[in-house]
Length: 432
Picture 1 (tube, rainbow, N blue to C red):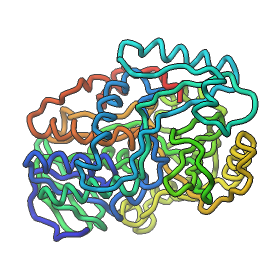
Picture 2: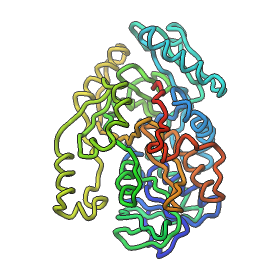
Picture 3: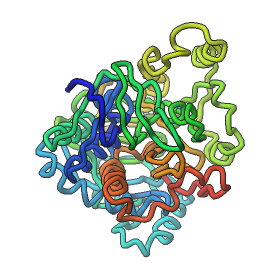
Picture 4: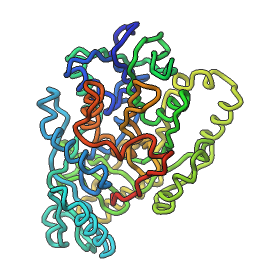
């Protein structure tokens, strides 16, 4: 949906993914005049390409209170948004093929016990009761029955449509060129369609946030990785749970098709890869086997930007329109082979479509949700590190609360932007 760009707005939200759309919805519902800007179609980049998992299971302890509250919002989201988002509360099942992995799950369950989350360890026998078609060696699993999954595109658009019904101005196909500041505060937003005067901006631009913020003097350590995903042909019912199975993860849609993700992620090396590299090294060392590094066109584009050749250096958010979406075909093939290995009875399955989803990650894999001190009037909600879909509803509500009265209903102390400069980084501790 596209409306005429207003000359003034009380609040401008940059980014029409699930976090930005949810923020606009909860603000509009609270009576706050808000404009939502998205440079492409709503949910057209990261939010439409994720796996659709909605889980509390395996979260970093810092994230868990938000994940639990977000889960409560998900339960009634279809009624709230007046839309079918294909919500299914089938639980989340993390398989352990050896005792070491099962011990890791047991440690996490013990660590978060005080949060009251219903998560339990299953024996191999009990696991097969949840997912009978599973074959092969198995040590057990971790099971959270209150988790679920939904359709990413339908959910993001449901939020933006509901925001519009509540009075928000939703403008797609309008790239933001720059956040404008004056006297230590926000003064407006410059876009490809014109200028909007505003005193409050929410930066929910996902993978583009680092560059937008860098242009106003803020440092956000952020790296982009590509995760390969595919949709298969329909197969008989397997399980209603979202499943983590070693090198693959999957969920089954209502129509029988499987959304199947391969293991690990691809990182295209750029000049930005060298920026703040020491902050990312601990996470990289801990998960070295999961990353595949590539040297190619993205680095060349960066060099062209630095030299200042071409229109992209002046208008990067307009010219370089799409995030990289090329899947790793070898990963997709291996993922399907792994799936057939653990489900040998499902032999008539083929890949219908493959794509890559971009994940914007922080050094500690914890997002930034923060009303920064300077420039005054800026709220940053980004860096969700692959958790944005599940956390989108609560992130949007908390952003709305900060705009409405300045006080979020949950503590966001561990989500501050300045933790990266103060040395208050959280240790990467999620187990999924």
